[in-house]
Length: 203
Length: 428
Image 1 (cartoon, rainbow over the protein chains, first blue to last red):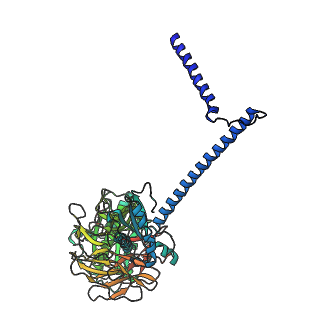
Image 2: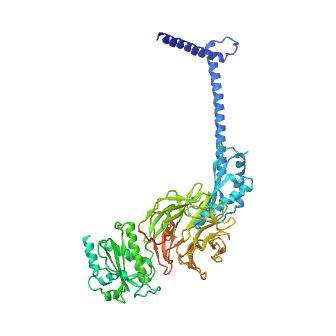
């Protein structure tokens, strides 16, 4: 019992010595500048200088951290912008499944994302407006999704990377009955389903 | 109960000889009344002896009215007839036939139909409730079956009151009796579309939509068990059963869609029926002999109704050259007598329900008010149920294609659509 108490005591002393040494060491890490003239109060000047340096270090560190955070935020924003751009729908004319010329830019912008994320797989979902037959719209939506897949495959994207589904008129983007809503509902949507985590920005 | 028994006895005593001969009159053989399909003969329904009197009378009256082949004479029922049956009085009320019903002690509905002109009983029948609780769905179906037989005795054509209609509301399956009563969710999960009846009325098929695609499910209404039929990915949509119940045809495909045939109960690989070369194809409907299929194809650049032999050969455009600048024809449904195909067509700003005569290919427009679409024939080949916006939101309506008379089947919140009229429900 006594032996154990002694060991504990010794350990405590040793530990405090280590702590004290460590504490003392700190000023030695940042050596004071070579004194040029004897200052009025060397100790306080040294302290001020140390504080100044510490503040500068902290500021530099904070700036670095801030820069890093900003860079990360920029990256995240770029990634989410790129993901959003990738998800941008392609729109169709009424009762049509062929890809309009004005929609090809949207499709072309997706190709570099496939190239940057070689394992990425996506699902293209075809949608329709609610004007025609509910059942035929399911078939038409499938055709719209298939048409976009055909375009991407023709541009060199492997067939196995693109699933196609149709939701017909069952999931409208805008649940209204007017020309504007119908135009927004006749679309293909793009969803990343695998292989893009982390998401790599296209060059 | 005693009252019911006593009243039933009183009624039965009215025509004891006829009752004694009940089993000797073959059902369906008309012994007097001549039915002219171009008229609606008057029928009077007497007060129903026993409990639930007004309800049974009202149900039979409504069923015969909805059948559109008889005119229900609108007069006070008075007390159940007693003593000599006053044919002269019923004749003066405008009735060619009188329906006399009573609840029996044995738990059945006893029905007699009188021929007023011949002053004799035309036919009688006994419809067992099999212990079904009063006003339960099974009990109501017994009254519906009795009404359908009454219609057959008088007109030689069986009614369709004992049927149900399956439909989609808020992307869920619902089922309702043909008179609008007994509205019940089918209780299947997920988004369910395009329901279809097996010819036995025991099974239904539908398309179940999920994030990764749409699949065909066959559900046994007796056991409540569901089975996913296709596992092909992509869209598997618009199922229909062949008239013999041995084949299920549906639309599927990655690049466009085509019709496929498969056993509804598993065991074989889907067999491709149509070759649309990447065009949208959907909504098959068999001819009643099972030899042909009507369906929608987008091959002309817009949807049109085609028919093909069931093996996929001899496909031809059914609906003739378009009228108007946006031709659009969809949702064919072959009538149970094979004579016509009902379908949807873009007519001006709206979709309308049309029917094409299969003999001369003449097309007739059946609706004209608001948007009307997606017809489904009743087993009598005369009525169709369809979706209409005439009351505002999409609801189901029933149309008599002979007279043009319509009635609203569903009410309430949520769009009702994709109706499928059942075969006659033979069992309670």
